[in-house]
Length: 308
Image 1 (tube, rainbow, N blue to C red):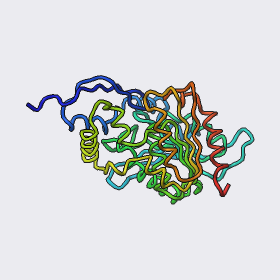
Image 2 (tube, one colour):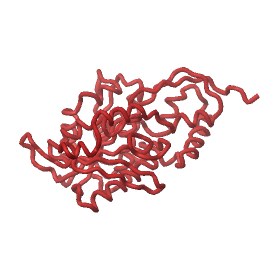
Image 3 (tube, rainbow, N blue to C red):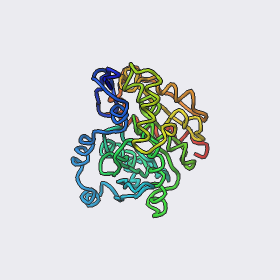
C-alpha cells in the first residue's frame, strides 16, 4: 500500500523550474527530480560554439581548463582575457559568469565577449552536471561555490586572470554566484539575475501542494542523494554573510522563479545592495538579449565597490 502520496506536476523550462502537474510517488523519486538536470540543451549550445581548440585558434577564448575539484569531478572552464575595443580601459578585474539550470557556459558566451570588450577578464565555467563538466547531480550551490573557488584559485595560480574578483549569474547561476561571493571573501561584488532562494525554495516551487514536513524530508533526501548538506544550499543565508555589494535584478512577470525570491534575498543581504524590479520581464527575457544592459550593471557594481 505504498501508494501515491502526492499528486504534483512539474514542467522544466530553460533556466529554471516551473510546476504544475504530474503524479509523483515516494520521496526518493521526488528528491531525485530536485537534483537531476536535463543536459541536452546546454550541450547543444556548447556544440554550436565549436570546440575549445577552435575557439582558441580563432582568438575568441584565451584558455581552456579542466579543473579537478574536491570530490573528483572536473569543471570545464573557458577564459576570455580583457580586450577593450570601444575605448574602455582595462579594469584589472575578473568576473565569473555562471549559466542557468540546464544550460552551459555557451549560454552566456556572447555576454562574456562583451564583458571582455568592456575591459573584464571573464571566466566561463560549466557548473557540475552541466555542459562539459563532470558530476552527476545539481547541488544548488552547496558544492558549486567550492568548485568555483577551486577554479579561481587555479587560474590565479597560473596568472591567467586578474585577482580582483566579481561574480555574475542567472537563475541557478545567480543562486550559486551569491553563495560563491559569500564563501570566497576575495569576491568584491555579485550580480544575480532572477536567482532562486536555494534548494528549499526550488523544492517548494516544484511541489507547491506538498506539506512542509514532507517537503523538508524530501529536500534532506535530495541532499543525501547528491552528497551535500541541504542547509548549505541557501542564497538567503549566503546573502546575510556577504561583505561585498549585491545587485539583484528580477522580472515581475517571472513565473518560473517568482520575484519574491529576490525580495527575500535582498532583505537578508547585509552589505551594500540594490534590487532592480523589471515590470515587463520574465525569467527568460531578463537573460536573453540583455548583454549590453548586463555589462552596464557590472559597471555599476564595480562603482559600488569601496576600493573602486
